[in-house]
Each structure stands twice: as C-alpha cells, then as structure tokens.
Image (cartoon, rainbow, N blue to C red):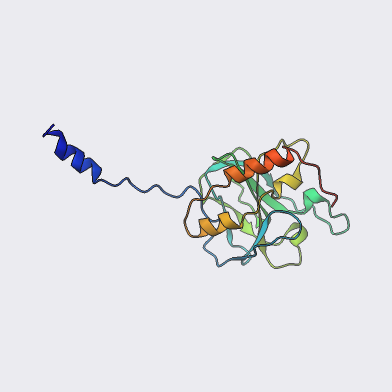
Length: 195
C-alpha cells in the first residue's frame, strides 16, 4: 500500500487535457452581427461583409448543396429562397444550414466529410436576400428525407441564438436535446407553411 500512495497522489494531481471545442461559430475571421429575432420562423441572419467565410460549425458530412440561384420575386418559391446554400449533418446528428451564399468551393459536395471550421462558402446575398445587406441565413434542424423536399424544416426549426452566443465565446453548447424535443412536438415532416 505504501508503494501505491505516491502513485495515487501523482494521478490525483494530474488534470485531464482540455479537448478542443466540438462547435465553432459558423462565420470565421469577420466581424458579425445577428439579432435575437427572425421574421416568421426559427433561424437567424448573421450579418457580415460579402465574401466572409461560412464554415462548418461541427464535424460532419455535407448533406445538400445548391449552387444555382433560382429565386424570383415574382414566384417566391420557398425552396428557392435560400439561393446558394449548403447543409451538413453534424456528428451530433443535427442539420446545420447556411444560405444566401455568394459562392461555394467545388470541393463541397454531398457526402464529403468535413471538420469543424472547414470552409463551406462565402457570404453573399443570393435568393430572397437579393438587394439586402450580405448575410448568412443560419438554421438548425433535424435531417429529413430529400423526397419530399422539406425546405421549411431545413431553413430552421429551433432558435439558434443561444448556441451562436456560446460558440462565439468558444463554449460547447449542443442543440441536440432542443432539436429532438422540437421534432417530437411537430413530427419529422411538419405541415408546410402557406408562404
């Protein structure tokens, strides 16, 4: 026992290594501003200069990529409102969506594995953001099947502000429980909005 005491003392005084954050803020190397409000559904618009980096907020797999801006103010089709967009399914099982992008690197394709902080696109004002200040529309939701197209889930189902605030400070705050609770409440494919 006397031989074990120094070993126990040594092990009890060693602090575990700090792990790198799981989550990162989705806009890198730019000054940003975002409101704690959004017009008619749970999401946020992160204002930043055109060309600022939209990065993966977590390790994950690219889910959807839209490289063509099909939005028209005359038709205002819901699926087209995001313009250029990228969504990933994080290693936590949550979908993270960014839209109104100016450009998307050619290496970003569905099925590509990305690490937190990987460049997903450049902030712009495509889709229904045309004519507005450049910003990243950022939504958090659960993965849904690609058919039928469930754009109203992809655009955001939970309020992201408290997560963005934490990630901006370098803190890990997971949206998993809130996403699961919302999905249980409204179902995997909730009714499409009228607009």
